[in-house]
Amino acid sequence: MRGPEVRPVRPADVVGRRVLAVLCLTQVTGWGVLFYAFPVLAPAISGDTGWSPSSVTAAFSLGQLVSAAVGVPLGRVLDRHGPRVVMTAGSVVAALAVVAMASARSLPWFTGAWALIGAAMAAVLYQPAFAALTRWYGERRVQALTAVTLAGGLASTVFAPLTAGLAAHLGWRGAYLVLAGLLALVTVPAHALGLRPPWPRHEHRTGHDPSAVARSGPFLVLVAALALGALSVYAVVVALVPLLTERGLSTAAAAWTLGLGGLGQVLGRLGYPRFVAATGVRARTAAVLLVASTTTLLLGLLPGPAALLVAAAVLAGTARGVFTLVQATAVSDRWGTAHYGRLSGLLQAPMAITAALAPWAGTALAAVLGGYSPVFVLLAVLGAVAAALSWWSVPRRDDRERSAG
Image 1 (cartoon, rainbow, N blue to C red):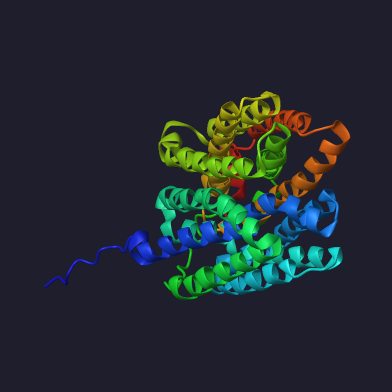
Image 2 (tube, helix red, strand yellow):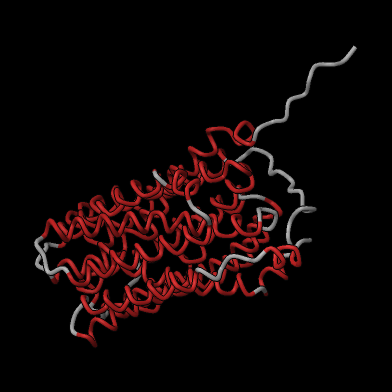
Protein backbone atom coordinates (compact mmCIF):
# COMPACT_ATOMS: atom_id res chain seq x y z
CA MET A 1 0.00 0.00 0.00
CA ARG A 2 1.08 3.48 -0.72
CA GLY A 3 1.55 5.73 2.26
CA PRO A 4 -0.19 9.06 2.60
CA GLU A 5 0.80 11.62 0.05
CA VAL A 6 3.45 13.99 1.34
CA ARG A 7 2.64 17.52 0.29
CA PRO A 8 5.43 20.06 0.00
CA VAL A 9 5.39 22.64 2.75
CA ARG A 10 4.73 26.09 1.44
CA PRO A 11 7.07 28.88 2.55
CA ALA A 12 4.17 30.78 4.11
CA ASP A 13 3.34 27.70 6.21
CA VAL A 14 6.94 27.45 7.45
CA VAL A 15 7.30 31.08 8.34
CA GLY A 16 3.78 31.59 9.57
CA ARG A 17 1.83 34.78 9.84
CA ARG A 18 3.46 35.46 13.20
CA VAL A 19 6.89 36.05 11.67
CA LEU A 20 5.57 38.47 9.09
CA ALA A 21 3.54 40.26 11.76
CA VAL A 22 6.64 40.53 13.96
CA LEU A 23 8.72 42.06 11.19
CA CYS A 24 5.93 44.50 10.29
CA LEU A 25 5.71 45.66 13.91
CA THR A 26 9.45 45.94 14.46
CA GLN A 27 10.08 47.76 11.17
CA VAL A 28 7.50 50.42 12.05
CA THR A 29 9.09 50.90 15.45
CA GLY A 30 12.71 50.69 14.30
CA TRP A 31 12.35 53.13 11.43
CA GLY A 32 10.25 55.46 13.52
CA VAL A 33 12.73 55.71 16.40
CA LEU A 34 16.06 55.32 14.60
CA PHE A 35 15.34 57.35 11.48
CA TYR A 36 12.15 59.40 11.30
CA ALA A 37 12.45 60.95 14.76
CA PHE A 38 15.66 62.72 13.76
CA PRO A 39 14.27 65.10 11.08
CA VAL A 40 11.69 66.29 13.61
CA LEU A 41 14.14 66.72 16.50
CA ALA A 42 17.23 67.98 14.63
CA PRO A 43 16.32 71.71 14.87
CA ALA A 44 15.65 71.37 18.61
CA ILE A 45 18.93 69.50 19.14
CA SER A 46 20.88 72.26 17.44
CA GLY A 47 19.01 75.03 19.23
CA ASP A 48 19.35 73.46 22.68
CA THR A 49 23.01 72.45 22.47
CA GLY A 50 24.42 75.22 20.33
CA TRP A 51 25.91 72.68 17.92
CA SER A 52 25.60 73.78 14.31
CA PRO A 53 22.86 72.17 12.17
CA SER A 54 25.50 70.75 9.84
CA SER A 55 27.37 69.15 12.78
CA VAL A 56 24.20 67.58 14.14
CA THR A 57 23.27 66.27 10.71
CA ALA A 58 26.82 65.01 10.16
CA ALA A 59 26.47 62.80 13.26
CA PHE A 60 23.29 61.31 11.82
CA SER A 61 25.05 60.80 8.49
CA LEU A 62 27.91 59.02 10.22
CA GLY A 63 25.40 56.56 11.58
CA GLN A 64 24.23 55.78 8.04
CA LEU A 65 27.84 55.29 6.91
CA VAL A 66 28.52 52.86 9.75
CA SER A 67 25.32 51.02 8.87
CA ALA A 68 26.54 50.64 5.28
CA ALA A 69 29.91 49.27 6.40
CA VAL A 70 28.42 46.82 8.89
CA GLY A 71 25.79 45.66 6.39
CA VAL A 72 28.34 44.05 4.03
CA PRO A 73 29.72 41.36 6.40
CA LEU A 74 26.32 41.07 8.04
CA GLY A 75 24.88 39.83 4.73
CA ARG A 76 27.00 36.66 4.89
CA VAL A 77 25.92 36.02 8.48
CA LEU A 78 22.27 36.37 7.48
CA ASP A 79 22.71 33.95 4.57
CA ARG A 80 24.18 31.31 6.86
CA HIS A 81 22.38 31.71 10.17
CA GLY A 82 19.21 33.71 9.63
CA PRO A 83 17.91 36.86 11.31
CA ARG A 84 16.92 35.90 14.86
CA VAL A 85 20.18 36.46 16.77
CA VAL A 86 21.24 39.35 14.54
CA MET A 87 17.99 41.28 14.95
CA THR A 88 17.60 40.56 18.66
CA ALA A 89 21.12 41.70 19.50
CA GLY A 90 20.73 44.69 17.21
CA SER A 91 17.55 45.71 19.04
CA VAL A 92 19.34 45.70 22.40
CA VAL A 93 22.24 47.74 21.04
CA ALA A 94 19.87 50.17 19.32
CA ALA A 95 17.91 50.97 22.48
CA LEU A 96 21.07 51.49 24.56
CA ALA A 97 22.65 53.64 21.84
CA VAL A 98 19.61 55.91 21.65
CA VAL A 99 19.80 56.40 25.43
CA ALA A 100 23.51 57.26 25.09
CA MET A 101 22.75 59.75 22.30
CA ALA A 102 19.95 61.42 24.27
CA SER A 103 22.31 61.79 27.26
CA ALA A 104 25.17 63.33 25.26
CA ARG A 105 26.56 66.58 26.64
CA SER A 106 29.27 66.99 24.02
CA LEU A 107 29.31 66.76 20.25
CA PRO A 108 31.92 63.93 20.16
CA TRP A 109 29.77 61.84 22.52
CA PHE A 110 26.68 62.59 20.43
CA THR A 111 28.52 61.62 17.24
CA GLY A 112 29.87 58.40 18.73
CA ALA A 113 26.41 57.41 19.88
CA TRP A 114 25.10 57.88 16.36
CA ALA A 115 27.88 55.63 15.07
CA LEU A 116 26.66 52.92 17.45
CA ILE A 117 23.07 53.53 16.34
CA GLY A 118 24.25 53.05 12.76
CA ALA A 119 25.70 49.63 13.56
CA ALA A 120 22.39 48.67 15.14
CA MET A 121 20.46 49.93 12.11
CA ALA A 122 22.25 47.43 9.89
CA ALA A 123 21.03 44.65 12.18
CA VAL A 124 17.39 45.67 12.67
CA LEU A 125 16.06 47.62 9.68
CA TYR A 126 15.20 46.55 6.15
CA GLN A 127 18.32 44.59 5.15
CA PRO A 128 17.86 41.68 7.59
CA ALA A 129 14.08 41.79 7.25
CA PHE A 130 14.33 41.61 3.45
CA ALA A 131 16.86 38.76 3.64
CA ALA A 132 14.58 36.84 6.00
CA LEU A 133 11.46 37.19 3.88
CA THR A 134 13.28 36.58 0.59
CA ARG A 135 14.63 33.27 1.89
CA TRP A 136 11.52 32.11 3.75
CA TYR A 137 8.98 33.11 1.10
CA GLY A 138 10.89 32.27 -2.10
CA GLU A 139 8.70 32.89 -5.14
CA ARG A 140 6.11 34.62 -2.97
CA ARG A 141 8.66 37.14 -1.74
CA VAL A 142 7.10 40.14 -3.52
CA GLN A 143 3.90 39.80 -1.51
CA ALA A 144 5.80 39.38 1.77
CA LEU A 145 8.18 42.26 1.04
CA THR A 146 5.25 44.45 0.06
CA ALA A 147 3.53 43.67 3.35
CA VAL A 148 6.54 44.53 5.51
CA THR A 149 7.29 47.73 3.59
CA LEU A 150 3.64 48.73 3.84
CA ALA A 151 4.08 48.55 7.58
CA GLY A 152 7.44 50.34 7.42
CA GLY A 153 5.85 53.09 5.35
CA LEU A 154 3.65 53.94 8.33
CA ALA A 155 6.69 54.72 10.48
CA SER A 156 6.82 58.39 9.53
CA THR A 157 3.03 58.67 9.72
CA VAL A 158 3.05 57.39 13.30
CA PHE A 159 6.36 58.63 14.66
CA ALA A 160 6.79 62.08 13.11
CA PRO A 161 3.76 63.57 14.91
CA LEU A 162 4.37 61.38 18.00
CA THR A 163 7.93 62.66 18.23
CA ALA A 164 6.82 66.27 17.79
CA GLY A 165 4.28 65.83 20.60
CA LEU A 166 6.81 64.24 22.94
CA ALA A 167 9.35 66.99 22.23
CA ALA A 168 6.79 69.70 22.95
CA HIS A 169 6.33 68.34 26.48
CA LEU A 170 9.67 66.68 27.29
CA GLY A 171 12.26 68.33 25.05
CA TRP A 172 14.35 66.43 22.56
CA ARG A 173 16.25 64.45 25.21
CA GLY A 174 13.11 63.31 26.98
CA ALA A 175 11.48 62.45 23.66
CA TYR A 176 14.39 60.23 22.65
CA LEU A 177 14.46 58.51 26.06
CA VAL A 178 10.78 57.63 25.77
CA LEU A 179 11.34 56.40 22.22
CA ALA A 180 14.31 54.28 23.34
CA GLY A 181 12.14 52.61 25.96
CA LEU A 182 9.45 51.93 23.38
CA LEU A 183 12.04 50.50 20.98
CA ALA A 184 13.34 48.08 23.61
CA LEU A 185 9.89 47.08 24.83
CA VAL A 186 8.63 46.27 21.33
CA THR A 187 11.55 44.96 19.32
CA VAL A 188 13.73 42.94 21.71
CA PRO A 189 11.09 40.37 22.75
CA ALA A 190 9.48 40.41 19.29
CA HIS A 191 12.72 39.44 17.55
CA ALA A 192 13.78 36.96 20.24
CA LEU A 193 10.46 35.13 20.39
CA GLY A 194 8.96 35.74 16.97
CA LEU A 195 11.82 34.75 14.63
CA ARG A 196 12.11 31.15 15.80
CA PRO A 197 11.19 29.07 12.69
CA PRO A 198 14.15 27.04 11.34
CA TRP A 199 16.29 28.90 8.84
CA PRO A 200 15.86 27.04 5.52
CA ARG A 201 18.97 25.73 3.83
CA HIS A 202 19.15 27.22 0.36
CA GLU A 203 19.82 25.13 -2.72
CA HIS A 204 22.82 26.71 -4.45
CA ARG A 205 23.00 24.57 -7.58
CA THR A 206 20.86 27.00 -9.58
CA GLY A 207 22.42 30.08 -8.10
CA HIS A 208 25.13 32.38 -9.38
CA ASP A 209 28.71 32.83 -8.31
CA PRO A 210 28.36 35.92 -6.09
CA SER A 211 31.93 37.05 -6.77
CA ALA A 212 31.35 36.95 -10.53
CA VAL A 213 28.07 38.80 -10.17
CA ALA A 214 29.64 41.49 -7.98
CA ARG A 215 32.31 42.14 -10.65
CA SER A 216 29.89 42.17 -13.58
CA GLY A 217 29.02 45.29 -15.54
CA PRO A 218 25.25 45.11 -14.87
CA PHE A 219 25.81 44.81 -11.11
CA LEU A 220 28.18 47.78 -11.06
CA VAL A 221 25.76 49.86 -13.13
CA LEU A 222 22.93 48.85 -10.81
CA VAL A 223 25.00 49.92 -7.82
CA ALA A 224 25.66 53.32 -9.39
CA ALA A 225 22.04 53.86 -10.44
CA LEU A 226 20.53 52.91 -7.10
CA ALA A 227 23.17 54.85 -5.15
CA LEU A 228 22.35 58.01 -7.07
CA GLY A 229 18.66 57.24 -6.72
CA ALA A 230 19.04 56.82 -2.96
CA LEU A 231 20.82 60.16 -2.74
CA SER A 232 17.94 61.83 -4.57
CA VAL A 233 15.11 60.01 -2.80
CA TYR A 234 16.23 59.87 0.81
CA ALA A 235 17.72 63.35 1.01
CA VAL A 236 14.15 64.57 0.62
CA VAL A 237 13.16 62.92 3.92
CA VAL A 238 15.57 64.89 6.10
CA ALA A 239 15.43 68.09 4.02
CA LEU A 240 11.64 68.22 3.75
CA VAL A 241 10.94 69.76 7.16
CA PRO A 242 13.39 72.69 6.72
CA LEU A 243 12.17 73.20 3.13
CA LEU A 244 8.57 73.48 4.29
CA THR A 245 9.43 75.79 7.17
CA GLU A 246 11.19 78.03 4.63
CA ARG A 247 7.87 78.15 2.77
CA GLY A 248 6.07 79.37 5.90
CA LEU A 249 4.77 76.15 7.48
CA SER A 250 5.19 75.63 11.21
CA THR A 251 7.47 72.87 12.45
CA ALA A 252 4.43 70.89 13.61
CA ALA A 253 2.73 71.27 10.21
CA ALA A 254 5.95 70.24 8.45
CA ALA A 255 6.20 67.17 10.70
CA TRP A 256 2.62 66.20 9.87
CA THR A 257 3.42 66.64 6.18
CA LEU A 258 6.39 64.31 6.56
CA GLY A 259 4.02 61.86 8.20
CA LEU A 260 1.56 62.12 5.32
CA GLY A 261 4.43 61.20 3.03
CA GLY A 262 4.40 57.88 4.86
CA LEU A 263 0.81 57.38 3.75
CA GLY A 264 2.04 58.01 0.22
CA GLN A 265 4.60 55.23 0.69
CA VAL A 266 1.80 52.86 1.67
CA LEU A 267 -0.27 53.81 -1.39
CA GLY A 268 2.69 53.21 -3.71
CA ARG A 269 3.49 49.83 -2.19
CA LEU A 270 -0.10 48.62 -2.36
CA GLY A 271 0.11 48.70 -6.14
CA TYR A 272 3.58 47.21 -6.45
CA PRO A 273 2.60 43.55 -7.09
CA ARG A 274 0.45 44.61 -10.05
CA PHE A 275 3.23 46.91 -11.23
CA VAL A 276 5.63 43.94 -11.18
CA ALA A 277 3.19 41.82 -13.18
CA ALA A 278 2.80 44.52 -15.84
CA THR A 279 6.43 45.56 -16.31
CA GLY A 280 9.89 44.14 -16.89
CA VAL A 281 12.67 44.74 -14.41
CA ARG A 282 14.47 47.25 -16.69
CA ALA A 283 11.43 49.44 -17.37
CA ARG A 284 10.23 49.15 -13.77
CA THR A 285 13.50 50.37 -12.27
CA ALA A 286 13.87 53.28 -14.68
CA ALA A 287 10.24 54.37 -14.29
CA VAL A 288 10.38 54.46 -10.50
CA LEU A 289 13.58 56.49 -10.48
CA LEU A 290 12.17 58.93 -13.03
CA VAL A 291 8.95 59.46 -11.08
CA ALA A 292 10.94 60.01 -7.88
CA SER A 293 13.04 62.61 -9.68
CA THR A 294 9.94 64.40 -10.93
CA THR A 295 8.37 64.63 -7.47
CA THR A 296 11.62 65.98 -6.03
CA LEU A 297 11.64 68.65 -8.73
CA LEU A 298 8.06 69.61 -7.88
CA LEU A 299 8.98 70.14 -4.24
CA GLY A 300 11.91 72.30 -5.29
CA LEU A 301 9.90 74.51 -7.60
CA LEU A 302 6.49 74.85 -5.94
CA PRO A 303 6.35 78.03 -3.80
CA GLY A 304 2.97 77.10 -2.30
CA PRO A 305 0.25 77.15 -1.20
CA ALA A 306 0.51 74.69 1.67
CA ALA A 307 -2.02 72.27 0.16
CA LEU A 308 0.07 71.86 -3.00
CA LEU A 309 3.22 71.34 -0.97
CA VAL A 310 1.51 68.63 1.07
CA ALA A 311 0.26 66.96 -2.13
CA ALA A 312 3.77 67.01 -3.59
CA ALA A 313 5.15 65.51 -0.37
CA VAL A 314 2.62 62.69 -0.57
CA LEU A 315 3.60 62.03 -4.20
CA ALA A 316 7.26 61.99 -3.17
CA GLY A 317 6.38 59.49 -0.46
CA THR A 318 4.61 57.31 -3.03
CA ALA A 319 7.72 57.21 -5.21
CA ARG A 320 9.93 56.59 -2.18
CA GLY A 321 7.75 53.68 -1.12
CA VAL A 322 8.00 51.96 -4.48
CA PHE A 323 11.75 52.66 -4.64
CA THR A 324 12.21 50.71 -1.41
CA LEU A 325 10.64 47.65 -3.04
CA VAL A 326 12.76 48.11 -6.16
CA GLN A 327 15.81 47.95 -3.89
CA ALA A 328 14.47 44.94 -2.03
CA THR A 329 13.91 42.93 -5.22
CA ALA A 330 16.82 44.24 -7.31
CA VAL A 331 19.10 41.27 -6.59
CA SER A 332 16.49 38.51 -6.65
CA ASP A 333 14.91 39.83 -9.86
CA ARG A 334 18.25 39.65 -11.65
CA TRP A 335 20.33 36.90 -10.00
CA GLY A 336 17.98 34.84 -7.84
CA THR A 337 17.86 34.33 -4.07
CA ALA A 338 20.74 31.93 -3.34
CA HIS A 339 23.20 34.63 -2.24
CA TYR A 340 20.70 37.37 -1.54
CA GLY A 341 22.19 38.43 1.79
CA ARG A 342 25.73 38.82 0.46
CA LEU A 343 24.82 40.52 -2.83
CA SER A 344 22.22 42.70 -1.17
CA GLY A 345 24.79 43.82 1.39
CA LEU A 346 27.18 44.80 -1.41
CA LEU A 347 24.39 46.61 -3.23
CA GLN A 348 23.03 48.36 -0.17
CA ALA A 349 26.37 49.69 1.07
CA PRO A 350 26.88 52.37 -1.64
CA MET A 351 23.20 53.30 -1.40
CA ALA A 352 23.52 53.71 2.35
CA ILE A 353 26.67 55.81 1.90
CA THR A 354 25.02 58.24 -0.50
CA ALA A 355 21.87 58.34 1.62
CA ALA A 356 24.07 59.00 4.66
CA LEU A 357 25.91 61.86 3.01
CA ALA A 358 22.69 63.34 1.64
CA PRO A 359 21.42 65.00 4.86
CA TRP A 360 24.77 66.62 5.59
CA ALA A 361 25.27 67.58 1.94
CA GLY A 362 21.75 69.00 1.75
CA THR A 363 22.32 71.16 4.82
CA ALA A 364 25.69 72.36 3.56
CA LEU A 365 24.42 73.06 0.03
CA ALA A 366 21.40 74.93 1.41
CA ALA A 367 23.79 77.26 3.23
CA VAL A 368 25.83 77.81 0.06
CA LEU A 369 22.90 78.12 -2.34
CA GLY A 370 20.74 80.22 -0.06
CA GLY A 371 17.95 77.77 0.67
CA TYR A 372 16.60 74.29 0.12
CA SER A 373 14.75 74.89 -3.16
CA PRO A 374 17.88 74.76 -5.37
CA VAL A 375 19.05 71.70 -3.41
CA PHE A 376 15.86 69.86 -4.38
CA VAL A 377 16.34 70.82 -8.04
CA LEU A 378 19.88 69.42 -7.95
CA LEU A 379 18.63 66.21 -6.34
CA ALA A 380 16.03 65.87 -9.10
CA VAL A 381 18.75 66.08 -11.76
CA LEU A 382 20.71 63.32 -10.02
CA GLY A 383 17.58 61.18 -9.92
CA ALA A 384 17.11 61.58 -13.68
CA VAL A 385 20.71 60.47 -14.26
CA ALA A 386 20.05 57.42 -12.07
CA ALA A 387 16.99 56.54 -14.17
CA ALA A 388 19.06 56.68 -17.35
CA LEU A 389 21.83 54.51 -15.89
CA SER A 390 19.42 51.87 -14.64
CA TRP A 391 18.53 50.88 -18.21
CA TRP A 392 21.85 48.99 -18.44
CA SER A 393 21.55 47.25 -15.05
CA VAL A 394 19.90 44.04 -16.29
CA PRO A 395 22.31 41.21 -17.22
CA ARG A 396 22.13 39.80 -20.72
CA ARG A 397 21.41 36.09 -21.13
CA ASP A 398 25.05 35.27 -21.78
CA ASP A 399 26.09 37.28 -18.71
CA ARG A 400 23.74 35.22 -16.53
CA GLU A 401 25.08 31.99 -17.96
CA ARG A 402 28.69 33.00 -17.31
CA SER A 403 27.93 33.85 -13.69
CA ALA A 404 25.94 30.70 -12.98
CA GLY A 405 27.44 28.55 -10.26
